[in-house]
Length: 216
Image 1 (cartoon, rainbow, N blue to C red):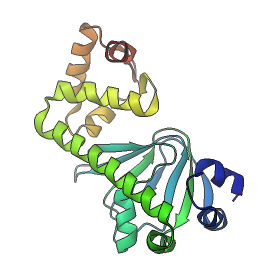
Image 2: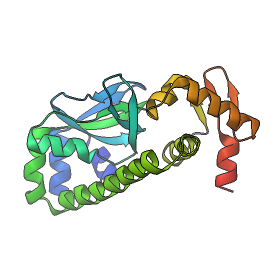
Image 3: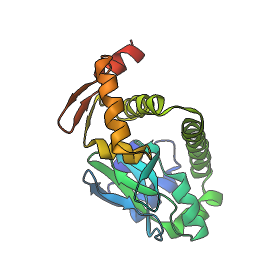
């Protein structure tokens, strides 16, 4: 892989670590909707995001998703990283929210890097802290927020991570992400539309009014 890409993406890593990533890493283009990691499967290669957005979720037995967090440029899924280190099956699913580019790294290298490269250790620890905070926010939302509040937060978080103000997809997709029914989401979306917070059309939600009111 091109060393300049690695240097530009990870200027904070030691030069030796960047050399190893360039030598061992595989650059991959991931189309929107493609799964990089599946639940209950062993992870053979570990992705670091270079461009795009990766959605990390948990799924229940009925196939409903619970959105945990998004991964952006130069970020890693530390939940999956812990599975790699322990040689355990993945406990999350990671899917490209939009066309993305990642570096896929052999999982056999990751454990030794923690002791060998100080910048990698710091990178992982910072990532773990961020992911832990996001998981706590998700837990708080599920435990303490009403569904209408969670739906607003769904769009606000999506904007914070992707800068998009439109959602293209079905009401069922939103319902699955929030572990509720399509009927509940459809009713709440119509309510939000009546209040001028969103604009609805077929398989599309324009939530720019909601963003404008929260990010003046």
